[in-house]
Length: 59
Image 1 (spheres, rainbow, N blue to C red):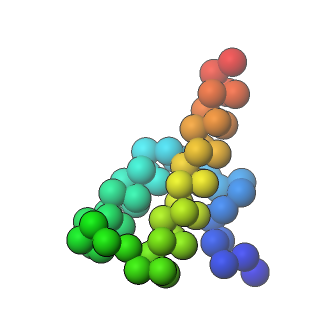
Image 2: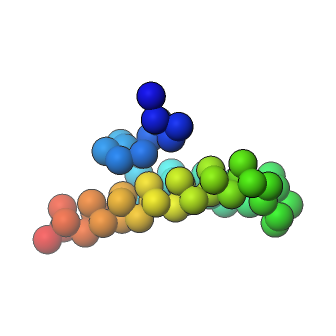
């Protein structure tokens, strides 16, 4: 099983992912631990894929 179960092919929207990213930063107080950094990076990759998917659908 992938360490990031919602990675490629996720059904989460860019808005939901953006909210999770913001929440992570708020919880961390602006300074991410190594574990939080890994979570952040995975969320940003997933967010970018969601944005890209929205652009392809719009085209």
